[in-house]
Image 1 (spheres, rainbow, N blue to C red):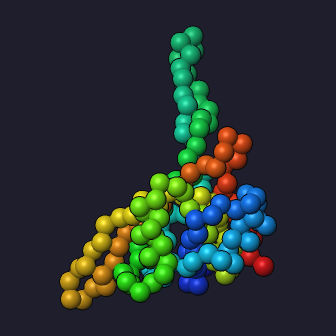
Image 2 (cartoon, rainbow, N blue to C red):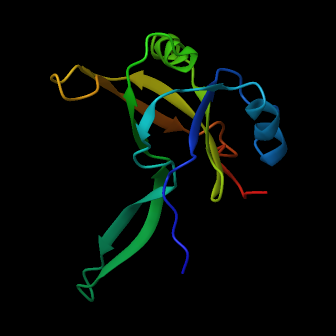
Length: 157
């Protein structure tokens, strides 16, 4: 069994949506996306998480369950505050914008996870003399249309 750490992973952010919601569309955006610097914890990456729909048939008293709708989830990044980082500047811009941004989480051995998200901002924590000043950036992943959710996994090369 081979396990991996998050070492080498990067978070990229850009406003444009991909021309197509597939590997080619996101790969094109990846070349010009801005890296968010000083990320120390990726949190939970986007994934379909289904709601459960349950009902009980009164004739047999048993509960039946089915998958309902789904969410792509919420991700909270922990970032060391760097006022000179272009990626963190873009996060601030995106926080004030009502439109979703393209997020690409790239990992050298696990591949890329790409989706569209609202950048919600988050609290800053300046800590004490023995800690790094950090911020928690919340990303709310959103579907892109009635026909597709826009969540794409690109395997590593």
